[in-house]
Image (cartoon, rainbow, N blue to C red; front, top):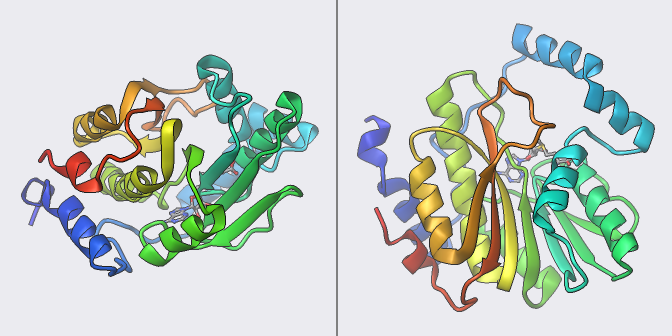
Amino acid sequence: MNRVDLRGFLPKTMLKNYLNGISRPFSPHLVRWKSGTSSRRWVTRQMDDHHTKQSKEQGFRSRAAYKLIEIDQKFKLFNKNTANIVDLGFAPGAWTQVALKRSQTLQNKMNILGVDLIDCSPPQGASFIQGDILSKKTHLAIKEHFQGGVDVVLSDMMANTSGIKDNDHYASMDLCDGVLILACELLNQNGSLVMKFYSGAEDPLLQSRLQKMFHKVYRCKPDACRAELRELYFVCLRRRLAEQKIEDIFADD
Ligand SMILES: C[S@@+](CC[C@H](N)C(=O)[O-])C[C@H]1O[C@@H](n2cnc3c(N)ncnc32)[C@H](O)[C@@H]1O
């Protein structure tokens, strides 16, 4: 079965499972990491990279920090009213560090929760939950942590890439569906979402869903992203009504 047959099927299955309390343990599109030349190439490139060196000097846990700094400068993501933030795909924690710094400069206390598949200790002033965003159990743990809505949902999640562009794209779309479901249930009115995606055929579908949820939806590639990757971000500002139902957002395909 190719992806064309699955269009509209996968999100609905995920939604149905989610609403029935079933966690999807393993996406059909997720691919396992294989160690080999591509991983060695990644390590070498990482060591040479300008942002990697800069992140070490400035005490950030990874070069990803500069992507969020850029997005915040351009879109004014964090402000005096930002109180609750969830950072999905937290590890090693640079985005949470950036949010903590903004909390200091804005002088408002933020409740920042990092979530990741892999265990990783949070920087001082933040919290962490180990979990899979495709699992309902993780969604419940996040909701329990906040006991109310959040103002900003961040997602820098990416499944391990296979080098097969379609597979990487669909694995990314599955993660984005998980983020959308969480954002739909948790994000306050006028709240914001920043979400990484690996570009491909389903970008317009994702964008149209986001446009149902937010007044402003921008597609952007921060300069700190590597040029050769099809990695992009949706920056979504000012959530429409917080009462929107997940079914309405997905009722498109
Ligand atoms: C590019 S890294 C994030 C870097 C991070 N933003 C930072 O600033 O340090 C992507 C992360 O997404 C996580 N991830 C991938 N799939 C996930 C899933 N299904 N649920 C939770 N986290 C996931 C990976 O474990 C990985 O740590």
